[in-house]
Length: 396
Image 1 (spheres, rainbow, N blue to C red):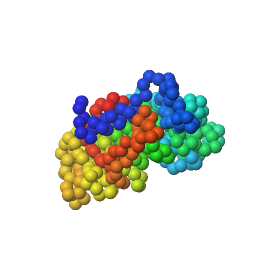
Image 2 (image 1 turned 180 degrees about the vertical axis):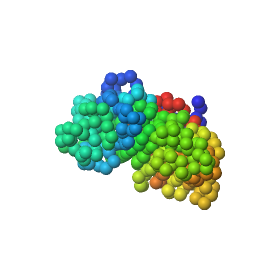
Image 3 (image 1 turned 90 degrees about the horizontal axis):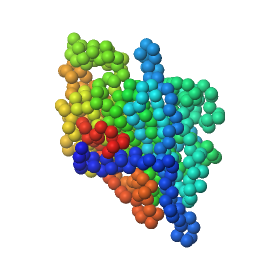
Image 4 (image 1 turned 60 degrees about the vertical axis):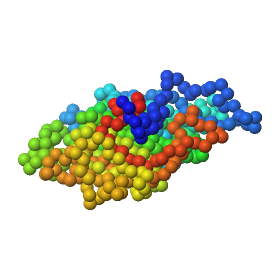
């Protein structure tokens, strides 16, 4: 598929984001760490993806009721400097039934292979139940909070832990999590940019593929790509019998008194960049999905518009959006009946705090100590049907 226009650059960014080759470790090319005669030059180094954990992830109990209601990836609040991933987060709902797989791809700045490996050895997966205790070093966490000792349970967080006095400012790890397709509850993701090194502004990107679940994403200046599963409905976590009752409601399809609405099981994706950061957001939705959209660049700059591509039956709310203000769009698509609430359905709430030209590097191979990093416009929001393709985190 030729994505063209803005999607071509996004596709390239995603390809860089997820590529790692077939290597078994860091790539140490001859002369990679050579200095200029005055000393060793520090270089950005990124390891390959490595599986840190694979184990049971039972979504529902024997009665079909959810067992896991929330999964957190990335530290929501810093608990000291030793719990910061500072990198990309990738989540794919393409895993084996009742199985979770977690991978890390470590990165740092180093002057030689031994120094880089020493840092990598201290960066590890932290997977504990944050509802039982605030994050501490693994040896200080309650034994019952370890999410890897038994089947994964509700309240678990997936963080990066640095086993040392203080995590190096340029070190962290990208996180890739593969979940079973039937997980339909909540996903919370937090990531940050690694901006300490001026010549290597490594943004924390997020990519989610084939999601049915609700998601709440908090980013800085990284780009965000989310593709909803092709069969996503307006209330993914609602039981089939309740969905049928909503679709066939006597007052009209999806009337407010239908079971999924009264039980507050409508789906939602909320994406927001922290101030003062600008993020590009692309959300790919099924064309016939009943949904509401509130998308805005808070800077109010026409250089960062909200763009809708190939959406069916979208109706803008003219009381909240105006064609003369292209940085904000509010409206509904595919409203199923007059009885259905305006602003209902699967909710997309997409916000970039700024519109700006930002320096971005997605791969160590793009770095040069004497060359300014490339720049790119950030702050555009796109809602589309089909623009990310079938495998947005792998094949673009």
